[in-house]
Length: 458
Image 1 (cartoon, rainbow, N blue to C red):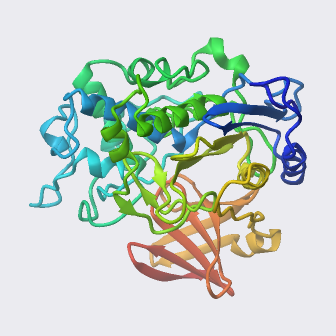
Image 2: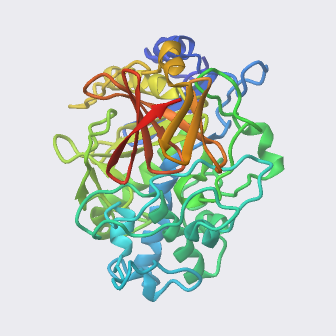
């Protein structure tokens, strides 16, 4: 591992061994990290390689997919436009959107605001996006929002009363992306560079999708749970505001430092103090608590902790990448860790636990877990052919740790393991539809739209 890249004279941090051990334990090819101490990036380091089986090492300028950490960075750009009077946090977005608008639900037209979108309380669908293979045709933003070919996801709509509860929605962030482009007339990557990336020195960051060819040499490849490289090295995310940022941990820490500075009212901050304080004010409580840092509410972009010392941050997971950003609001401390593996979550947890211990972070809950992967015997029990109802059958095969499910007359779908339920029955969920499969003994249950349907094995 290379350490202390921001300050070569600094002694080796005590948490180097924790990361190296975690990468080896979980088969994660590479990782990069940076730590904020005393209001500056005091330490940074790397470990491993950009692509498994190749010699190119991860360096301080190797870019990883920020995944959902793209969202709070994009939210900062949105808040700059709000502060300029270009956008209104509490206006109906349909009064501004032109090429797409939130559709009606029968005779009810939902009213949704930017405040609700950015705090995941707007009630919009599409929690996340699977991305596209590099050889795929890419849809436009409007095609994704409408669910039109070549989009690989359903259209975005409201199916929960806006403002009433937390409902994580990458679809809502995509609506923000479209709105920002339409009100400025500027492509999203250029707009992000103008409003956020350049002003705070995020020189190794870019939202361009697909990424420019000249940057491919500094981009890490993603890896699945079996250690294989994601097809083409990485997926492409035209849902740029939701998942499209390529960056480094040091650049993510620069974002955190910019937020800390704005909150403190520092001269020249990216947004005024009053706006930064609104940004870090809880808008809605989440339904679960983040395992790294106890984040249990959402502000205007970042997730927040509402008990104990004030913290903000965000986690991220795209195909083949896992990462996390966490910072304290008031004490100039924080860190970012990025990995190039679907199992990187477990390395990230252990790295944050080591960082928190080494720097004596106050009251910082970090839960360290082990992978909950299905046993081969569990996967084997699912394989076979089933009848959902007369005239509709499906077949299930296994692909590594996933299920490949084919309903008659439909293309195959991938279902991923989501753990055991209270009765210790394995559950698999679709990555493209709101559908779950559960296996109780030898009975396969199809779960969709609140209905449980027992399937007959053929």
